[in-house]
Each structure stands twice: as C-alpha cells, then as structure tokens.
Length: 91
Image (cartoon, rainbow, N blue to C red; front, side, top):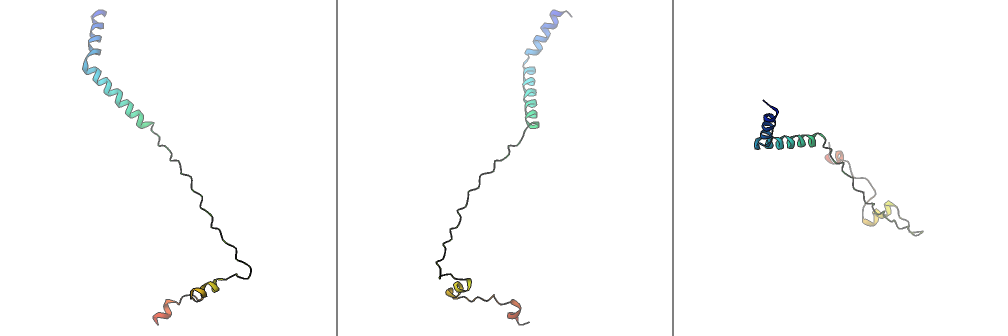
C-alpha cells in the first residue's frame, strides 16, 4: 500500500457519515459527563430580614400607674391562679 492509497482511504473514512455521527455523539457525551463532574450548586443568598418596628410604650402619667392586679380588676378578673385539676376531681 502506497502513501497515496493510504491518504485516499483516510479521506473516505473521515468523511463517512457514520464516523461524523459517532464523533458528534462522543463529543456530546464527554461534554455532559464533564458538566456533571464539575457542577457546583449555587449557594442560596439569604434574604435580608426586615426589621420589626419596635413597640412604642407610652409612659404613664405620674399618679396613674397601674399594676397587673389593678388592670385585672378593671377587666373583672381575680388576681388568683387557676384551681388545680386534682381539687376539682375530688380524688
């Protein structure tokens, strides 16, 4: 086989549709594998928390200070804790 015949054979092989198709498929497979290997998830950026408005407490006028018992009596509630369940059951 001469060099001239070898070049003609290589030209026919490289231009064949089967060789071109297989070459494209191999390149695409290598690209997908490369993408999967080097894939990095994007780190989610935490959203900035909104600042809550601070509750503004109105200062009581001198002489009008009320404790918890005075406020409870205005609502009609007693300042005593709720009864225990054991006393109600009678056992």
